[in-house]
Amino acid sequence: MRTVLFVCTGNTCRSPMAEAIARHSLRQPDGSLNPDVLVVSAGLHAGQGVPVTPETITALEARGIEHRGTSKSVTAEMIRKADAVFTMTDQHVEGARELVADDPAQHAKISRLDPEGDIEDPIGMGQESYDAVADRMLEVIPRRLEELLAK
Image 1 (spheres, rainbow, N blue to C red):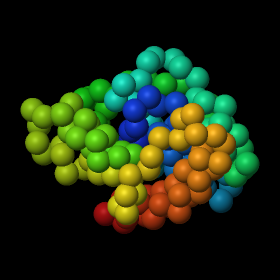
Image 2 (cartoon, rainbow, N blue to C red):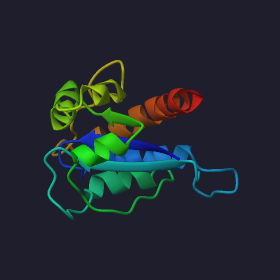
Image 3 (cartoon, rainbow, N blue to C red):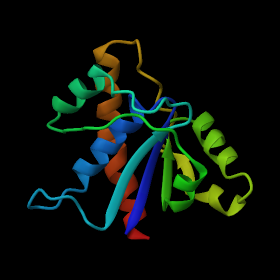
Image 4 (cartoon, rainbow, N blue to C red):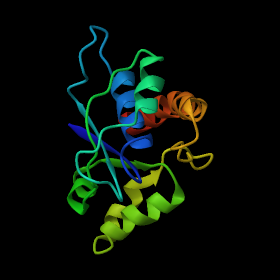
């Protein structure tokens, strides 16, 4: 089984949205989850058990995607267990790499989700910003998963 870890700051907007979109993208034709891929998310500065923002849920539901879960902090162990770690910004790449600074071999699997640029935090920016993040993720995530699974 391969593990994909999405990382942002607080694990209440971007990374749970990415987690839900990735799971949705990986669904089998019968609607079941792909048993070969585990998708999780966490935040570099997340509190434990904070609900996902209502705007994130609204953006996902508008695209026919469900998500349940609460925030959790990323750990070095989570990074080590993951086959790929996708972050939202270059700062998140740096933060994740700092967590495994004692194991530089882990650094190569940590990269920004969108190769074209940072996915900015929509918090406090209104529903349109969340929708724009969801739309961008719907473009980027299937390609990134395809690249990972082709390896």
